[in-house]
Length: 207
Ligand SMILES: Nc1ncnc2c1ncn2[C@@H]1O[C@H](COP(=O)(O)OP(=O)(O)O)[C@@H](O)[C@H]1O
Image 1 (tube, rainbow, N blue to C red):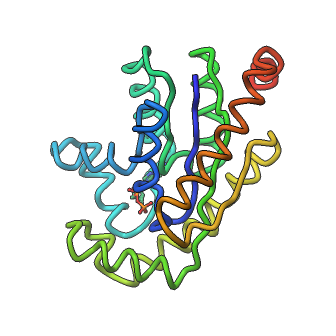
Image 2 (cartoon, helix red, strand yellow):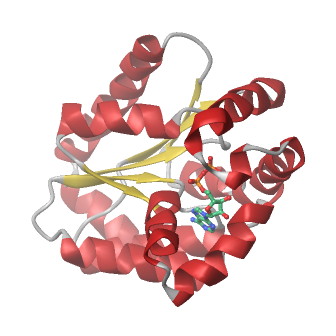
């Protein structure tokens, strides 16, 4: 199994790169933002509660997104692997993901972070807001709050994967295809390392 975490602030290009990666590696795309928006569209109670927080640019509780990921993993037992987009966003989410994957005898191959400066993020998200229908993309104050939440609550997840030697940061500014090439190079390098020592790598996760 090839499991990748695509990381970076809102507007960094995770969704765009995810679409290219699922086609290239035949992976299942798991975006907690998309899963939450599906709950909102269905008008579920979970969706109603999440919407209030999402519209303000705040995180929804860990147990909500962990539960959604747990269900999605079980619903895709035959998958060749997953791209996690927008998850994990906190250290407890990262710890839960390792536990859940271990239950499926799998692990994270690597985390690839797309780095983009705040002013560029704000420009991109306001542009996306013109067509995306996402309330959190239409208001600069909310966009900046999401970037702040990323810097204060989410950025430390990078350290969690760095400690496992799985973290790689790339410049997320430039041509989409150039960035895609760099993301693939990182993934292929990690995949080769995992193929060489799968047993040792699995023990590390279970320890
Ligand atoms: N893993 C998560 N943990 C907590 N909240 C989440 C998570 N994923 C998504 N959300 C909620 O959904 C919103 C939108 O997320 P997402 O679609 O990933 O967009 P973006 O990365 O552009 O902010 C977030 O601001 C947050 O409220």
